[in-house]
Length: 459
Image (tube, rainbow, N blue to C red; front, side, top):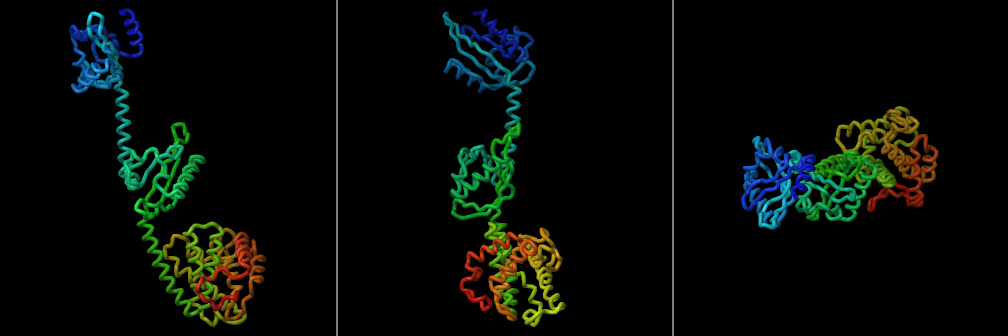
């Protein structure tokens, strides 16, 4: 037994493990320790431990009581973490593994080993401090922050997120978006997360609407990025979502006020020149139909429709005898008509819209080959919205009655668009327009229900 113990001591010394045997009965004392044990506790030699009591080495009395109580109850203890008082005045962290042994002659002793885990505990404390700092930072950010694994299961959230779903953070871990949101909305989030994991590309500033537990909807802006390990391998996603409902409502109200103000000018134009007003409403509806065919979202559709409704607002300053003059206009009169684009641009250019409304209107008479006005723009210099307005404007103007001529009809209008396709007009937009015309049997597809229009051709 003694030889085996010393063999263990030799091995333990090489591993930095302190071995000991400590007698409880008939008297308390160390009767076998290795040099590593004394080194860990700062004793010059093994002999210096002969007069020490094991219980006196514990820094905290509560740890000593817990250790001896557990050892007495279970007969053994594994990796009991505590702090000791060493001979140098330090307080190292120690892990004790020990067994309570009773010999044949009723001698009772403890046989065990200790390890110095001070460096590990300091590292744990540092990591804990960093985690607490990070969690504190996350919890003080007024945005929902969340982390997900490769299966899109939530592994961590901040307090703002937890408050939003009405659960404690611990109750959210392991769940997915399907546990908190309507299926269609959760599926969209699920697909976004998978796309990030697959491609490694983030999603930045995506506008979404989310259904709250109280049944109301809010508008949020979300950014999601891939999470990677030290080797750069994607291990999940991290997202941050900001509630912008109040801002969105305020912006919506502001836009509504501006639109209402411009509508008043449109009404004034209607009273002065009913044809132009009717024309602009039709162009707006045609342009919206094209935008829908292109798969645009509702915000972009709003922009193109509003541009259509306002694109001829500048004509309010042109004398009616020029606007409705039968026959060909003189060069001076034609140049005067062309000014309506600039006048409308100057009227609305300083109004802040979430889309380039003034510039769209400014360009709607430009042509791909540079033959348009007022700036002779070419090709990609012309906004797509402006190219849509150009085609919509031509179609509506040609198929509708005008005070100085009869309607020219769909065949003539389509022939003009086909002839100018690729040179004057965007070929993709012309193709969409021709499809819309054919799908509706060469009848006006832009009429507003309940709106009586005296200037359109009969259906």
